[in-house]
Length: 173
Length: 173
Image (cartoon, rainbow over all chains, first blue to last red; front, top):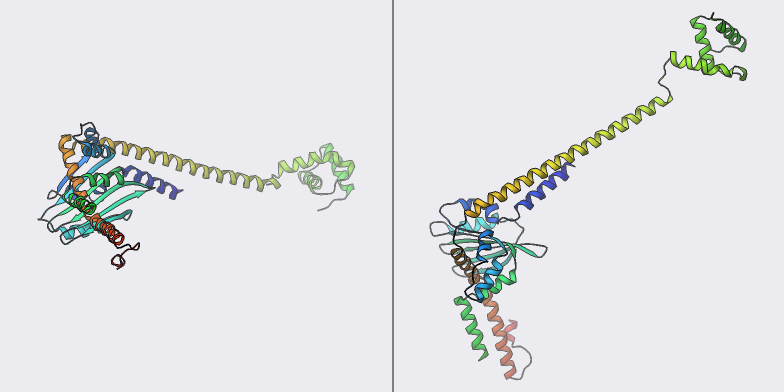
């Protein structure tokens, strides 16, 4: 009986914490660290954003998928911090319910994407990045559609993407 | 302590006269309670057995069973009490957590006001920046894959040009 009660309580507490970012639950020290640049956008703000008139189709897609989010949190530590130590510490502290989605390594950056997925639903997508003089942790939480997000990423007018598309064009010639 | 019938009949007639002593009455009671009562004296048996029971209250054969029953029910009722207490405890916990959660959500209003941006346009711009950041990383991660796809396409073209259906060995390396 005691066990059941404990279990029940634990479940309820976990349930209660559901709608919070990992940054809030596990990395509150980052959130309160004044030397970091911290950005927080709430569900409420996303709801307001959803009412904005989109400038173009790309923005429309972005607004649409963003309106389903519970929040976005970004932590940026600049050159005054030790990005490597921060990165390693962050990876160590991540609960193991986070699965690695993608890792990108090049000479000056190390980026890891992780998701918290349950029953086929992604509840949180986080990106942890270590640069030469920068550490970034980004958390998207709520009802996340990975397809949607990668579609948006593709659409975003990024140099890399342009290059890729150019390559594609060359190929067709 | 057995008495023969004669003695019993003597005592009985003495008893009806009201002349028996207490010990003689006791003898009669015992005879009727435990002895072999002849048929013609059976009528009196209940009288003396009743006396015997009243004067010597015995635990009786049912006693154990009754006590055990009682014990059982009292054990049962304590078990029930426990369940009841547990249920009450559970309800309390659930209410407390519900309250806590409610409080939490009302607390998120100030947190929502703690939004980094008060202006939805700015929030959208920041969201875009976050997605752009992810897009860069996503695309960086996908670029090698795309290159392979491209290489594969080129190979197929070359293979076609040379009239081969198989891929060039370069891919298998």
